[in-house]
Image: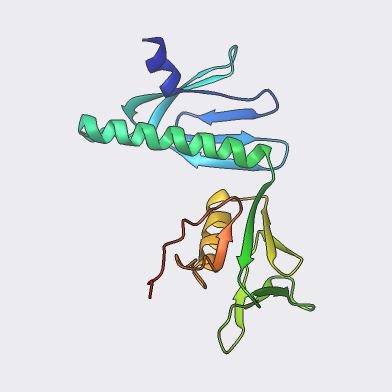
Amino acid sequence: MENFRKKKSIKVPKNVQVVYCDQKNIITFVGPLLTKSLKLKIKLLLAPSSNLIVATQIPVNEKSLRSKDKKKIQGTTIAQIKQILIEINYKLYHKLNLVGVGYRVFSHENLANQIYLKLGYSHLIYFVIPNGINSYCQKFTKLFLFSNSSYDLLTQTAAQIRSCKLPEPYKGKGILHDQEKIVLKKGKKI
């Protein structure tokens, strides 16, 4: 029974304040870096003495939901709250490595939100980085992306940059995430 409660409860850090409005079903987290809110589809129970938030399966609307849907919404809400707690406490970053002869990344001198990618094509690829994300080029083959606001936007931007040149399985050339290892295939033997 205790394991079940651990899965459905979230421990809130001491440096985070939680404001929960039961009538509007909105929970707001105030952290050291920023403030974020979440619109809820289920009811929450707060235990301020032990800094716990417990997610129930009671829906906000009186619509009849299947028990499967209630469990899915409960799990999604728990995951969203945990994600918000990470976003408001830590600065988020993502590192990309360019592997290949002549693969380079350049930042634009005048525009802070634009980078150029040289990836073996006959032309440069221009990529506009969305607002809320900062980029830093180190050594022309390493790209750091920083964000204060959204982990989802940061990972989506990194995936879009990576899709410009996916790693190929024979030589391992392309744009790789940090710590990513490619298992190389053997080519044809003559």
